[in-house]
Amino acid sequence: MKCHLSIPNLFWPDPNFRIEALPHLENLLARSEKRKREACSLEEWILTAFDVARQRDWPVAPLTAEENSGYRLRADPVNLQVRRDHLTLLGPDLLSISESEAASILASLNSHFARDGFHFEMEKPDVWLLRLAASPDLETVPLYDVIGKDIAQYLPKGKDGLKWNQVMNEIQMLLHDHPVNDERMQKGMHPLNSVWFWGGGIFPDHLRSPFSSMTSSNPLARNLARYAKTSFHPLPDNAEIWLAQLEDPGEHLLILEELRLPFRYRDGDEWDSRLRKLESDWFAPLHLAVQKGIDLAITDCEAGLHFDIGKLDLFKFWRRSRSVLDY
Image (cartoon, rainbow, N blue to C red; front, top):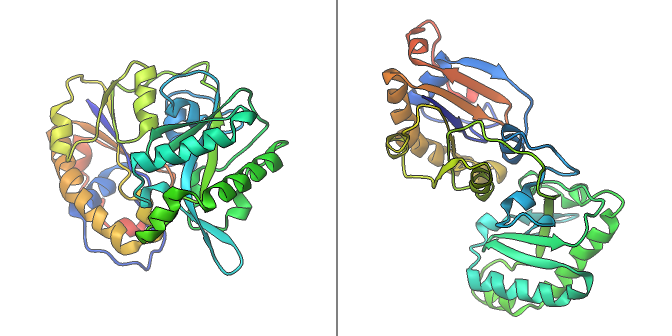
């Protein structure tokens, strides 16, 4: 059995940041065979693993949808914030969006844009899609790559880029006085004052799974497993539960995204706290499992680092453990 652990943003970018020792993770990394690869987003890494080709964008949206017809864009709700000379955004993960709020705003968007043939859909309260009758000439930037940055540098491009920037502006005007946002602001919550378009495309001609099973909270991963007829499990609380449910001796993928948000918002204390919990809930049991004979691969695709370790590697005592920050 080989277990693949994909954990984006495992490596904090500031070497001067200080954290306490993480003995299980540090030992696994030190004794493994390390390889450097080209850095990429989690979505790109997953799609590449499933042999999905890039279109103008990596086709995240059509593979997030429950049905595979037509061109789709992700149109995730965000909160735009005015800085001194630019705009930044808060992603939907921090906005605590209820299903009723999402449904109300999507109904307004569908009514307003019906003449354009747009149809907005809710995958989850914080994951929205836009279905179009035809494919635009458009290239976008994934939401997670824009968080905390000046959005002007990452707006849609291509022959239809200007049109879609205008659509975004129109949506912002529509949402400015929306009743959902009036109520949210009365409660001291951030308004849902824009959407971010990204990950557009049509359903791919080809995909295949290299894994016997996938375990994740990511809707893209769930749908890829469904379309590729691969066993899928929702994310459990710890590695012991995960390992106990693996019956096939093949290759199994686990995706942990707990570090992604604090990394993007550069919240080092929260990143450290979540990494410490991963150490106890995941790395400690996985360390023991390697001692018992499973092979483990750990990948941080966004850092471009990959580590392979098996039982015999644990005996390479000359490879001294070092802080995660040293990588």
